[in-house]
Length: 206
Image (cartoon, rainbow, N blue to C red; front, side):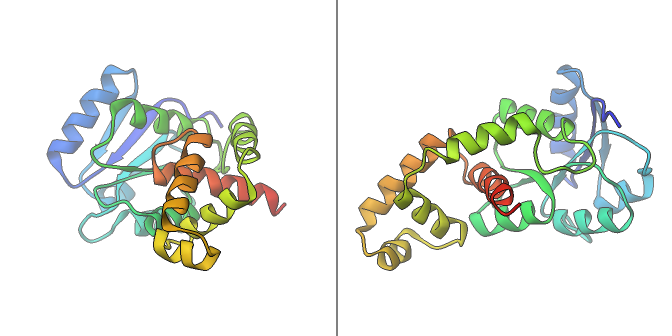
């Protein structure tokens, strides 16, 4: 099934709904806005196409609960989570729950567009397109053994001080390794780093 260019925007903040609807609309997307997760679930149909951009913190049903309910109802639309409170544990939970991306507010317009296009390129909920997977694996392969050790600590949500203690190295050394990992993976976002790492690790387990 081709997902087309529909974006289902789910956010309880009317100002954010209006601004993102306008921004995405001027970029050629067809946007349908919903004031809550429940509103979305009541109006969406399993046969409808597109992707979902949903806020994490919403009354009655948050973004994580929305993704779980979508699975139960067989609504196989890719989901981009947006949040004002992103951290590594949240990013890991969101990605493992099926989100294609997690963006921290305030985010750049181009970052949202990239996430939406990435989501729309995924059919049937696959983790990542083949071309992107190959790119991620190529970047991951450039990491040194020590950089991978530090990344593993980051993915477990551990602070630099704890990672340094466990690896027997200085905190400053951990900071340098983290910076190198971000540079080699070509991202400034911890959420994006988590997403790419999960893609790489999922392939390694096959």
